[in-house]
Length: 333
Length: 175
Image (cartoon, rainbow over all chains, first blue to last red; front, side, top):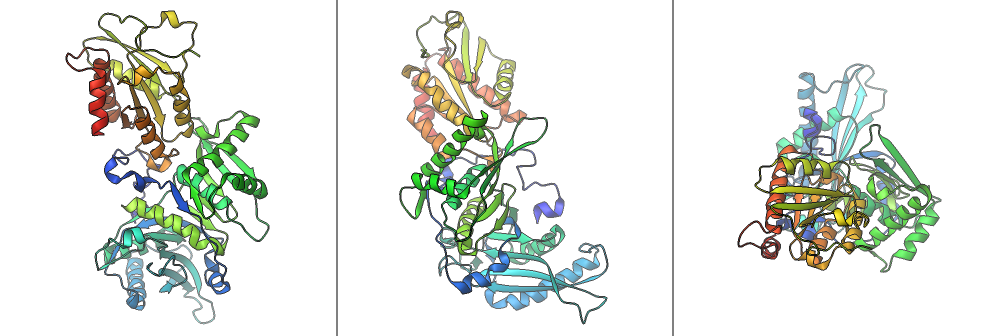
């Protein structure tokens, strides 16, 4: 994995040197940049669905985009776990994936997560888990999951329709665990399936979409306030502004703005954010629109501009993943 | 409110005046310095404003403005709003080739705060070219400066046979 392996952070332009290119050329088509409207995430109510995906909630996931995988087959998942375990053992002998505090026996499992799909045309999500058992007492100690990552594709028709036969489209990869493991798993996948991993960071523009979109989602339980964190540029010391809005207030505002149910447009997102900004300006005389939105925290999910996400509601899991899949596809195209 | 007009004053001999409108940090200043370092055979005056309208009390001292560059930083949503508000104080005849939009910070797409469709639309609505650049990089800053200088030369009428309107039509039909 680029950024994890060489550590130069080349794949993260937000921290490194600015790169020069023509990202806004018309050849890309303007609609590919940002659609003017998106579908609202619909909640899922099935009890089974929510239980089977509950372990994905309340964890921080780092986001990566993955180009289509060549000759990946769901029928061979068991072989893949065997091969990946062997790869781990080999890497360990070279002295790479060693954790401080003794020898660890790493077991790899590659399984399918059939619940995480937008439509039947989507590929089922693939879960990779590393579990360890301390070698000192192999019998009585329980296996502990030390790292997990999953590939998924929710409503990624745009990409998968145009793919040649032997390719599998799973553009979004989410990771929870140590970077050293991520690097090894990433290397194996990149070598075996000829794909490429890249960190997926979220631009302030996309974060504002998330803020508006997720505020409009109805949640059952009493939920925490919607919080937006801004960072002020051009200052000698980093300054962060946190702006929290009561969920009821944010939703009341959103309800006055939204026109067509089930759909959300760019214009509505702009109006929603501008309302919040002008309210803040009225009180503190600070133009939040001149700062950088770095974090959005809502009852549905929390997203950070570095490409970190935390899911809070299992009923909106696929809805959130749909947007992230779209952004991942946008990055690899 | 004072509206900025292109033809209400007489031009000065062998000189051209550029107005940079932008509110983001020291970038207008830096770009102006880079333009002034370029080799040229006419005098260049650069005026920098954070927004329009320009103050009316010193209006009689201000020379005729040949070209206006509106700077939009993609990391700063406020800069787009600022430009949109400033455009109301520009006379319609300026849009016959004497205005251009300069979108800066495109090297950091991950920090993008503005809707790019809105920027394209702005260029279309005002019939003016949209240029993209990254002012943090020396190389692109210099090439942007050269580009603007050449456009300024045309807008001031120092290129025989090419008028600002002709050049604008050429630019907007190919971009």
